[in-house]
Length: 298
Image (cartoon, rainbow, N blue to C red; front, side, top):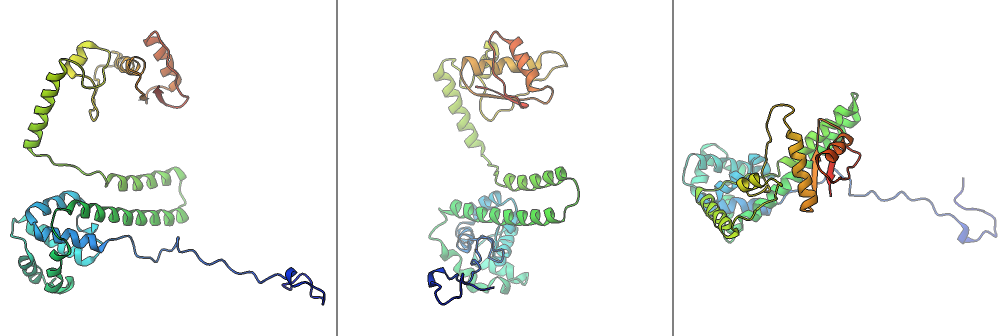
């Protein structure tokens, strides 16, 4: 096989085919690269702790629910673990006490010695930007966790021999765990809670009885609750066949039709068609329902 259309004397060089070249491999799918991490942000977190341990260490413990594994550098993992132990025991934290604790546990040389510890407070001008450093370290940790989870999923997909639905459930559960790790709880002091309560009472007084949330259509209930507010979970409890669903649907219909606000209804006890018939019987107006089990007003 030749690389030219014709090898005759009169063949034009424009008609000759050049040898095929393999496309250059893309670096996008390489798995031998370093995982996402930010050594500067990790040093910034540790530096802030050494500059202001009483204010910063508590915020670090609250932010890093996964402990020292949020750090990529093994030296930083060891240093943070020792700092957390000293913080729990209410011990004084500075470069000297940290160095002594690491020396007692024979870990000082593993983290770079006193020379490396002394450089950590100098990596940040102050502890004011600790929150930004924490967010960077947490973000890189979640990216590494996502890579690990996705790599494990690919391996399981190739070797899986069971039911597809079971595998899908496992994959969804693993991804959901990563998403849940982003949710951070916030601890409020009693001082902040009292200030917020006083502000809410003053807002009620200024409104002169007007609702602060979404009205339900039941005047007595709205007077007691001041409407439905975001972040609340309201449970309607009663014996069977007492009208719990009808009450909830009346509220949803009032919000959708009277207040012109979108409402979503998710039911596990009946289909969307049955819910549509019930909506027609609950009120004089009709609402349009989609064909799936999740219904919505608009």
